[in-house]
Length: 357
Image (cartoon, rainbow, N blue to C red; front, top):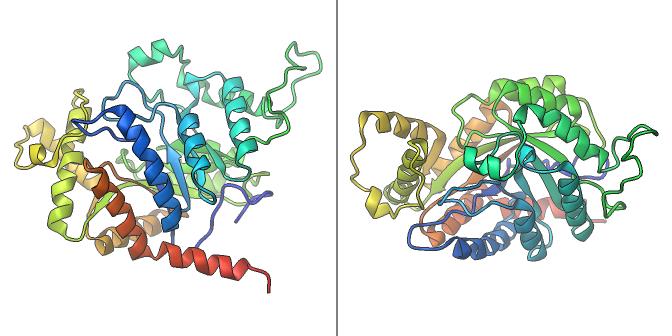
């Protein structure tokens, strides 16, 4: 573990694996049902030995129910004991930094040492939602982070500032460690320079992660939360006992991706709807991008590819998102991957090593 308070960083052998939950909404079900199922995944992730669980922020997407990460974090942390839980991430331009500081300091007070604050500069939505959220331009991201740190007590306002006496309550709980989410060298360099953690969104961005991670490590300066750089690689993956079954269920994810990238977002389609579907030439290009980004196969195949990609870019941890249509298939995919990686055995060995003699 790294950092002054052992926060944020988990160094494990084998490679640490974590979970990103978008709270997917399958066709024929409701967003409320998807939200209730999220608790089951949180409990499973902890029992299987995953390092952390993050929730995304998206708006106006019929296939995604994760719109308010702080509330999902509170619920997940309440039903688990060891698992780190956080945002992947809070889209800071959508929010007043004071409100974010108070929400996450509250979470930190209720669940000490277990909360992560992942921040993004993108809107996580379309233009209509940005207007409704009163969002500011993402170009102001660094200024918003600085303001967030003011309300966390990390940066002091000048003595003559009119808001100098304002307190972000609870004022005796620390802001959780900050992670910057991104897919570019600029965001990576910023994260390193500020001493934050960094997470690269390879689950949806075809941009190579290695240059960003290199920029992050070059720029890194130790901070109270991170005494050394920590880079997370996000990947999309689905594994099943056989390649054929994995491909069948991944067909749903593929069709959902094509619809989203074509400007036609819909709830996750049933795999039968996706099977045998013919794609237009434009859609075939979208499919090729999906296939390049998504790991599909048996647990051993998926784990081998995760390890290869992590080694290629120098990731310290890999965060896996699985948006299978069938909730049971989704849970099984995480279970099979954890068993292949022997996550529980690794956690038990780490616990034994740290136990007093």
